[in-house]
Length: 127
Image 1: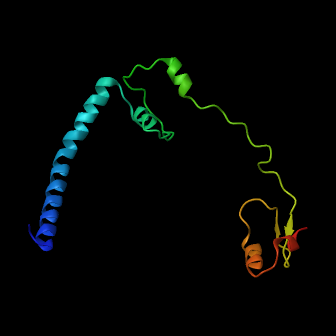
Image 2: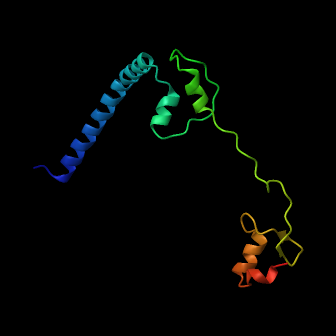
């Protein structure tokens, strides 16, 4: 058995060979996949859904897949009901020494975080 340097040299050569083989076969494999996709009417959306990923919304052309209209209706997203509190102005729950305010929603503002880190209790700034 060779020493460590010889083994590492062999590993490096084999990794280079593997990279060359992969790059030579990549284009051929992609072409084979595209042929299969066209033969079976598979779209990128189908692949994304099969992989568990939600496809991004993109403008797509209707392909040759001949999917029934009912399938298309199932794929369409339902409209979400807007939040009742979205855009509503909230009363401040905390007020800082310089008049800063915070409603208590979202991330703690820097002014309050600095005061709390300095040892003051958050409740002492409650309105």
